[in-house]
Length: 140
Image (cartoon, rainbow, N blue to C red; front, side, top):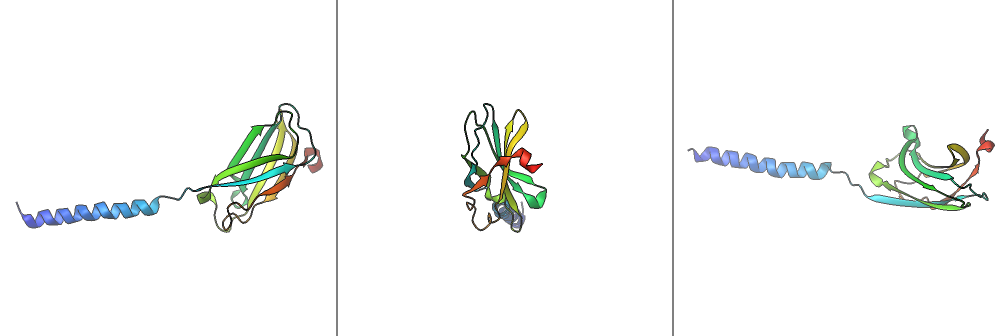
């Protein structure tokens, strides 16, 4: 057996082994979870089966939902606190982000509200703020 060929094969295998490790390390995205909190404000008593949905949307991508927090708010009243958890890797520089909230009763929108969350790249937890909820009829 030719020893020169064995060394060549060994070096090729060694190069593939170490080279693939670098590629794998570079291609794995950082999925750091960030949390933002806020509150839905207003002086409204919610009905017994009220369902609350709060979303973080990327307006630059047709309101693509980045994060969602939903819960039943049986007989609670506003203000209500919320917390959204999202992957920082989903936030892109130069995009516009918005927090949107709706309160539903049997599928009908009772109250809605929205607020801008534009600084998520520089300050991931920047939205510790309030969303003013208004009756859905106010939008008509």
